[in-house]
Image 1 (cartoon, rainbow, N blue to C red):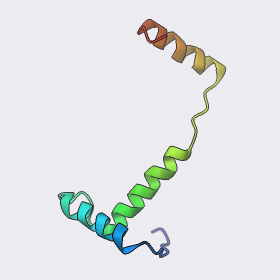
Image 2 (image 1 turned 90 degrees about the vertical axis):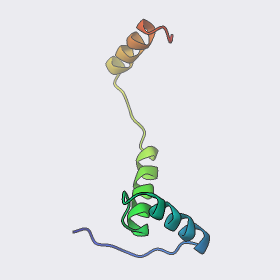
Image 3 (image 1 turned 45 degrees about the vertical axis):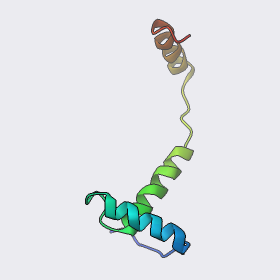
Image 4 (image 1 turned 30 degrees about the horizontal axis):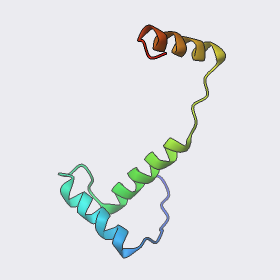
Length: 69
């Protein structure tokens, strides 16, 4: 099990998270679970994908065959 730590958030954000949890139909079981999900998603978007020159050429070829470039 992962070690957990506490963070503080504003009451406004807490209330918004609470509403999402309540409306999630059980998808999120707690505010902590939702907050961790959101943070993980935000952090994974920060990671930049780096393609090799060969991969870039393949992507360009596919885009060209689809008429995008």
